[in-house]
Every structure is written in C-alpha cells, then in structure tokens.
Length: 293
Image (cartoon, rainbow, N blue to C red):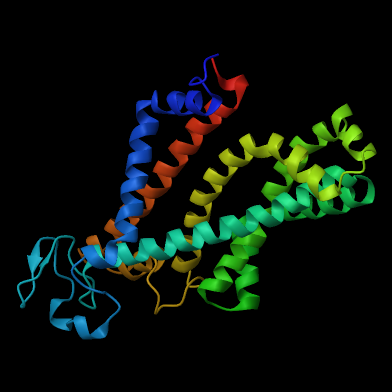
C-alpha cells in the first residue's frame, strides 16, 4: 500500500463513490450553511415584534407586503416570514441535537468503557440500567422528564441526553468487552498502566467505527425528538423558534387553506432528517466489513 493509499483516503473515496450519499451530504451542508448564516440571509427576524405587522398575516407564498418585501414562502397568522422562521427554527433544532449528542456521547462512552473494563457488579449494574431504560419508548421518557424539569432549551437537551446515553453505552461496551479479554490488554495492566489510559488508548479506538455511525443516526433522532416535544407543547418555550412549534402553529390552518404555515417547516424537517440518515447509512456500509461486497 502506498503512502497516499491510507485508510482515511480509502474511506473518503468509498463514501464519495455513492451518488446518493454525496447528494445527501451536500443537502445537509446546505442546510447547515443556511442555518449558520440565516440571520444575515433571511429578510427579517421573525421573533422581533418591531419587524412584524399583523396586516401581513397568512399571506400566500410569493406575496408582497405593504413595505414591498416579498415573502417567498408566505407568512403565518402573526405576519412572520416563513423562510425566516424556518432559518431560525433550524438553528434551535441543530443546536439542541448537536449539544445533546456531545453530552450523551461523553456520558455513554464513559459508562460503556467502565462496564467493559471493570466487569462484575459494575458491568451488571450499568447494563441493567441500560436495559431498563431501553425497554421504554424514548418519547415517553422525554415527556416524563420534561414534566419534572419544566420547559426550556436546556431542559430539552438534558432530557435528550438521558434518553440517548444508553445506546452509546451499550455500543461501546459490546466493542470494548471483546478487546478487554485480549493479551495486549492484560500486558498493559501488568505493566501498571493507568486504567484511564488503557480505556482511552486501547479500548475506545476499537469502538469508534460503530460510534461514528450511531452518532450520525442519533443526530437525526434528536432533531425529530425535539420537534415532536415542541409540537406537543412540552419542548422549547413558545418565545423560541423551533420547527416543531412552527408545525404546531400551522396545524390549525391546514383545513382553512393556509397549508404553507405547516407544510414548509415540515418539509425542511424531513429533508434534514433524511439527509442525515442517508449519510449515516453510507457510513455504516463502509465501516462494517460484513456489509461490503
């Protein structure tokens, strides 16, 4: 193998050989750029009351306001530009999903490594907690937690972290427990290497491929879960933009003909989730040798 033919380069080449995965990655990148620079791209801040006019309420897509501003995706009942509302809503959705993913990943990896390395009662205790949590639907656990914590972005992040950490712990434990029984781990323990170094330098790298795939899937799950909680009225406050809240606000107007209030945020949510899932499926096919031809 030449110097240039590294595993990373081969992984990138395999990923970009799939046209659907490349399109999905490009779509997600466009969503991320639109979300990051949304406040400077969209025509208004939909949550600044000084920029809203009730006279512009429920305007269909392509309409113009009295000030000459064109609403390409229409407005809602409060006169908010739907394109601007979607941009701000995506910021909240992606911020919540990535924040909860990082925290759940850290906590789940630590718990999984501890269960695999120490074994015995530690392994039994951690895995019984994981089994009990995974036996309940995630949305039910999140609703119960938010009923105890109250509404707020930080509360939603904490609820999603508690819901998702168990999947990371089980995945890491399954990969690390195989490595723990190998001779080089026993040799490292006999040499007196610290436990933290053995877990971080020897056990964790073997769990990275499934973790990458699982993390990609969990981002999409966190976005969908946050949108569901906000749609049900248990997520972010009504004063914060969220795709789930936008869909909930437009739900009552579907039968009246103002379909765009709920449809366009729903389309943005579906496109984001599908793009992330397609990228995760391609990574799973590449990183799992059993799925390769």
